[in-house]
Figure 1 (cartoon, protein in one colour):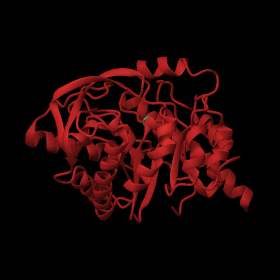
Figure 2 (tube, protein in one colour; figure 1 turned 90 degrees about the vertical axis):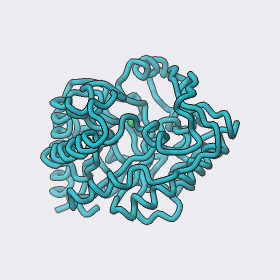
Figure 3 (cartoon, protein in one colour; figure 1 turned 45 degrees about the vertical axis):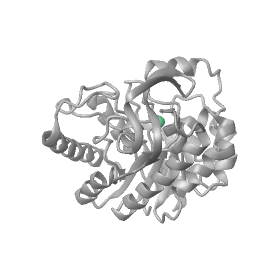
Figure 4 (cartoon, helix red, strand yellow; figure 1 turned 180 degrees about the horizontal axis):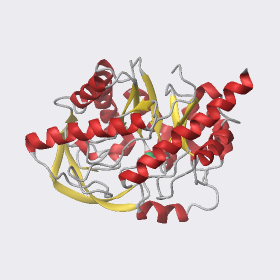
Length: 345
Ligand SMILES: [Zn+2]
C-alpha cells in the first residue's frame, strides 16, 4: 500500500432492509432466485459506495453476498449434509445446530469467485476478501466421517487454497482468513492450526491476513468476555508462532477491549490491522478516540505496517451507526497521518 495508515473493515457491514432483516445476525434472505442474485449485487454496490464515501482505503463486499461467514462457504461443498444437523458447542461457548460431515469434503465449484469478480469490476481500489479459516470451519460442523479435527482441517485448508488462488486470479489484493477459534483452542492452534492456515495460503502472491477476534457484540460473546478477567491475554498463546508464519497481516481489537496493547510486541515485524472501532456498542467513536488508539498502537507497530480497522464485523449494527463508525475511522486515521507526516518533515 502506497498510502500511509490505509483504513479497512474487519468484514461484514449491515445489509439493506430489502435484502435481509436489519440489525440481525445470520438473517435469512428476503428475496429468491434471480431477484436474490440481483439484490445481493445491488447491496454490494451500496456497501462499496458507503465505504468509499466514508474514505475507506481497502474496500470489501461488506459480506453482502453471505448469510454467515462460515456456513455460506460450507454450503457450497460436497460431503456435508445440511439436512442432518447436530447441536454442538461453538468455540466452547454457545450451542448451535450445525450440518454434519458425512463423506469426503470437496469443492465442486468456486464459491465466492463470481462475487469477487463483480466487486473487482466496480472499483480500482485495493480490495480485501474474507474466507473462513480451517479451524473455525471444523468448529462449526459435526464430523461423522474423518473423526479427527486435524484431518478435517487439513482437507478444508486444501479447499480454501483452491478458492484463494481463484480469488487472487479474479483480482483480489488481500485475502483474509477469519479464525476466531484461534483464541480458544491454543494447543491445537500451535500443533496444527497455524500450519493449516499456511497450507491455505500456499502459492499465493497477493497479501494474506488472519482475523482472530472476540466476536460480534452478541450476548453469547459479551457474556463470555465477562469471564475472561481484567486482561485478555489469549493472543499471547498464539502470537509467537503467528509471528513466525507466512501470514502477512494480523488483526487485533484495540478499542474498548481488554487486550493489553503491548501484546503487539509479540508480532513485531508483521503488518497489523488495529481495531480502533468497537463493534459491540452503538456509541460512535470520535475521530480523536480513533487517533488515540492508533497512537498507542504506533509504539509497537511501525507506521508503514499499521492498518486502522474495526474490531470485528458490523453486520448487527444499524446502517447509520455503521456509517458513522466508518467515517470516524477515516477521520481518526487522517489525524494521525498528518501528525506522522509533519513530524517526518
Ligand atoms: Zn471478528
